[in-house]
Amino acid sequence: MGHTRLGLLPTTRKWKELVKQIAGPRLTGHVVATAAFYIDAIAAQTLDASRKALDNVAHDSGVRYTFYLLTQVALASRSSDWENALAQHGVRLVSDSTVFDLTVEVQGAIDRYVSRSPSGATDLSEMAQQSAGEALASLAGLRTASLFGGSSADVKNAVRSLSTKKGFGELGQRFFGRFFARFLNFYLSRVTAATIGSPRLRDLGDVAEFNEALHAHCDQSARIVRDFCGEWYSKTAYQEGIDLANTSTFLAVAVNKLRSELEQQGSEH
Image 1 (cartoon, rainbow, N blue to C red):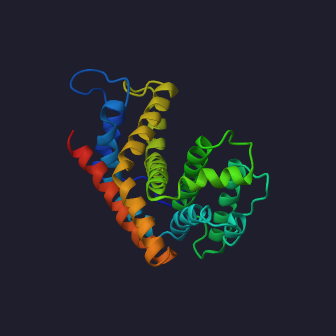
Image 2: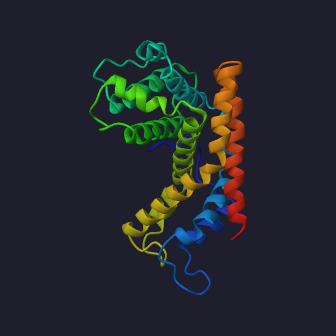
């Protein structure tokens, strides 16, 4: 992404061990050509090395607003006037809008919000923004005939399936899976680029395989927060309404759940 607001790469002993694990010569005496075998240990060690940045997730205004906006898009689909409900959050659709248009509008609303924030856009907020767009496009797109075709009514019906407890749990899992993959890649991309030619990462193909394995790992690991997302969304929307304050509280718990899951997986190796 070209930014360094999360800080420099860690220089701790644990981080150096992680670099060695990616680029080092061998595991159990045999050359390993793919990262899939030990991806969970790498994820856990990266989280440990970048703990300070991870602790900022729930307090980052852009991350908080991005997840809040996902809840509001889902809730808007249950309104009799979905386009007006979205417009209240700066997301403007017309009768022939598509899923692609929705994701563009959501991205624009997030941009405008973070531009007014004292801290402005951060790497964390950009990761969240991109992850929200991917989550909406991939899940709502599956529920329409085309990502680039259809109508606003078709988009509403697609999003409405994500507005239930189960549906929002799926949306939350997709968001957190993509977010954590981006977070880990922020640190690891520079390491993997620097270790091309090692026995484990011999060329760009191996790096691509490594990144693909990391994304799949994070998507699967995010299942730990799927039910939690759905239950929180359903209960909070009904009992008190979802706002930025309770979204921040939720994010702190969700991030800790997923971090613990990844760290536990790493400790098993």
